Length: 592
Image 1 (cartoon, rainbow, N blue to C red):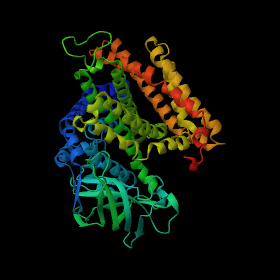
Image 2 (cartoon, rainbow, N blue to C red):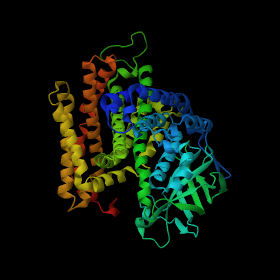
Image 3 (cartoon, rainbow, N blue to C red):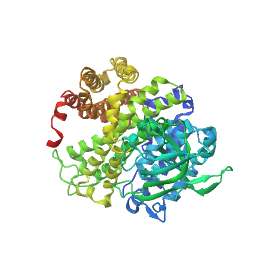
Image 4 (spheres, one colour):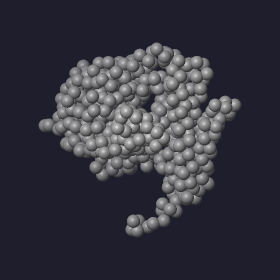
C-alpha cells in the first residue's frame, strides 16, 4: 500500500527562507515564527500520514453508496472526519468570530496540501465547506452569518456549490433552475444540478447548498443568475434543525477517480432557499467560492504529484532491474536498483522539480491572497487574479502528467491496482476538469486577465522578474544556472504577450488558438522564478553555515535540473503561439 510523508522541511524552507513570512507586515504573519509553524505542520503531517492516508485506498475501493436517499461514505471516513473536525483543522484560517482559528490563508494552504495528498476525496468534504462558508462570510447578511457559519466552520454542517446542470456546464447563462419569490422573503427553488461534490453524505448533521438559479422575470443569460442558500434541513430560530427541505440526491455518479467523495445529482423540488447577496448578482457571490476552489484545485495537482513521486522514489530505490552501464552499483545482488538508470532519474527529477517548484508557487499565491484580504493590497489582489488560471490550469495539467511519470517508474506494477499508483493518476485527472476546465482557464487568462486594469498586473509580474534578476546579477552562483534561463523564458513570455497585442484585435482566434500554450508558458516562467528564489535562499543558507547542508545542496541540484531541462519548454510554447490561428482553424468542421 502506498505511504505518505508530509513535506514539512520543504514547506518550512519556503515559508521562512524564501517568503520570510515572520518578517512580513501582513496582519497575523508576525505570529508565524519557525517553532509555531513547525508545530502546526508536524501535527497536520501526523494526521495526514496516520489517519487520512490509510483510508485513501479504502475510499477508492469502496466508494460511496446511495441507500434510501442517504449516501454512505466509505468505512472509516466518518471517524476520521470527526477527528479532523475536533482538531479545529476545518477552520484553521477562518475568522475567530464564528469559531475559526484565525490563522493566515497561507497556513490553511500548507496544511491543505498535506491533507489532499494523503486523501483527496476525503479532504474535499471540508474543503468545499470552507469555500461555501467563505461565500456566506463575504456576501451574507449578519443573520445568515450567525445562522450558518459557526456550524459550517466546525463542519457540524458541511457545504456545497451547485452550478452545473445536465444541459449546461461552462455556459451558466443557459441554466433552467428557477427560484420563485415567496411572501415571507424566501424563494422556492426548483431544478436539477449535477456533479455536486459532497452533495449528500452521512458525516454531518446538515448540508448547506449554495445554488445558482434564475428568478423569473430577471435579465436573460448570465446577468439573470442569483445565488441561494438551500439547507438540507431547515434551521429553526433557536438554531436547532427542523423539517427536511425539498432537496434530495437522485444519483451518485460512477467516476474515474475520487471514489470516496460523493458526486451527486441533486434534485430541488420547490425547496426553500434564501437569497445570498443581491438579486441577479449570483456569479459575483459564487466566484468568491470558485476562485478559492480554483487555487485549491491547483494545489490538488501538486498534492497528487507529490505523493505519487514519494512512492515512485521508494520503488526506484528498492526494485532491482538491470545493471548500471558505467559499472555495477549493487555487485552482491542480481541487479542494480532502478534509480541508477538515467531515464528513471529523468522521470523522478521531472516529478521532484515540479513538486517543489509548484509548492513554492502555491504558497506564494496564498501569501498574495493574505496581502489582498488582510492588508487591502489591491496590487496583490490584481496579481493573484492574473495568476489564478495559471495556478489552476498549469499545476493540474502538470500534476496529472507527473502521476503518469510516477506510474511509469513502476512498469507493469504501476498499472496494477494493488500498488496504488493508478489511484493517484485517476484522482489527479479530475483537477484538469472541474472548477472550470483548463481550456477555459487558458481563455480566461488570455481573454480577460492579461488586459485587466490596462495590463497593469502582467506588467507588474514582468517587473518583478526583471527586478529579481537585476538585484542578483552580481551573484555568480546564480548567474549561469538560474538568472540566464529565467531571463530567456521571461522574454519568451513577453514575446507571446506582444504577439497577442499585435494580432489579437484583428483576429481574435490568433490569441485564443495560442491561449493554452500561453498558460503553460506562463506557468513555467512562474516556476522558474520560484526556483531562482529558492536557489538564492539555499545559497545564503549554505554561506551562513546551515546545519543541514545536504538539504540545500539537493535543493540547488533539483533547481538546476528544472532550469536546464524543463524551463526551455517556453521556447516551444512561443513557437506554437506564433503560428497563429491558421493551423488550428484551417479545417472546416465537416472535414474532421
